Image (tube, rainbow, N blue to C red; front, side, top):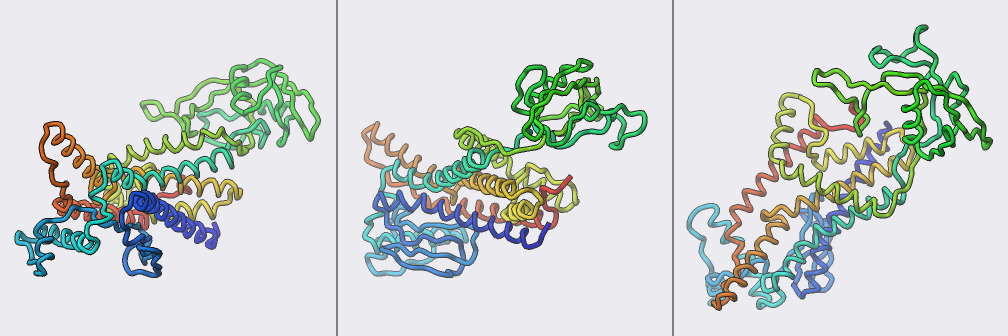
Length: 449
């Protein structure tokens, strides 16, 4: 692993994250401007502003902490009558009684009311029809989903998926029993049939007993089903076809799952099966997949990430336990951006061919965008899903009033949820801090055994 390649991978991940955040905010910005909402700021990051420029009525810029972004829209909340009356009369508003949370609610209303008064309540978010508010808030997550689909399409259809080919990469010298507990041959081990028959690395299997094979799985299925029966292999060696007779031996081999790991019996011993065996290992090659493979992978990832997000508090708690005890982390558990950067660095610094490393990086960035899509749909403020719930609830109230011929109700005042928002933010910060610490002290790694 080279340090320079590792750093490049780490930095590229954060550049990709910045692009993902920028696209997310553009997903909010485009429909907001299309629907006539005044957007004061479009910012990537939080904290002190590093650079900004005003174009039209919107200030565009970058801030010091690239851990998110936002657009500021006029009238995110409806005006509070008391504050508007006080402002119209030119009087200063006093602090609300009731303690810390009441003060937070009032501060949110004051900031919101100032933008409304300055703009005379034109081009404001809360006055839009419900469907337009939902479109604006969905725009950000949808952009992350679309970006992920594009990345997965490049990965699956443009580059391809690692697939075992019919070209021989290596040959076993002997047949070692599955329960031998060793990898070196001894005198009592029979010679592997493929090596004995004269197959060589680089040979490409064209057909077996008259059946054409185009994948290693097809060849392997015929071999496994034919122990003790002589098979005619037609191979391509350096552009010339030739036939070789190979007789698979009956061998006990471990049962592997879809990930290539041994399947265990209830008592913890590996499951085995008796199959035909010749002792060849295939070369892997990148095979482009159909164009729909990328979108399919994206939506499969949505389901997987949703399962993790649903259990996020429990999984973060489990991660905190491993942080204290030094135990092994769940390889399918949540990561912070630091953890994602570590994996990106390992991918970039690995010994794999460049296309494989590019594939690994694209897959990681695509998965990160799926996580942004799912996470932002959680129906809690300040996330996009929380604003969608507020807009939908406002629409339900209006539809109910219209159904029973009642006067239109006042807009839903989301500033009343500021205390809940505050608690959610604190929890998110806490969970993020735990994951960052875990990724520094007890990181997940693609190099782990």
